[in-house]
Length: 144
Image (spheres, rainbow, N blue to C red):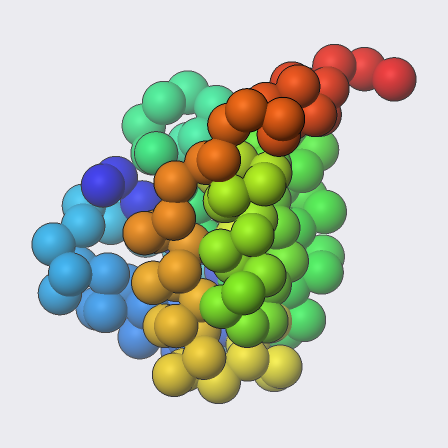
């Protein structure tokens, strides 16, 4: 699977660990930065990640910042993205099964490495349930 991953400075260590983990699982990983611990603005990296999903260069995305909140908001500004903030595997699984999420966000200050890996495993191995959920998901990309 082609996976894009981006973070802010607060999550750079978790991002590095997850890039290695995902690559080890055989995924094609695009690290969209940043590449140093210098302070950056999470919206810039959330937008980069959203663009990779929107233009089709990535199938799924992983967005990381200190809490996961800010970068998830940035990613969701792009109507091609359905980014779910998760902190445990059940939420990651349900984000795929019920919401067809194509990006997950996690907070490096809130989610440990083992839990982040477990969330990724659930996110990447769960298929969208379709059926009754498809109608609802279609509405997510339609202006209110």
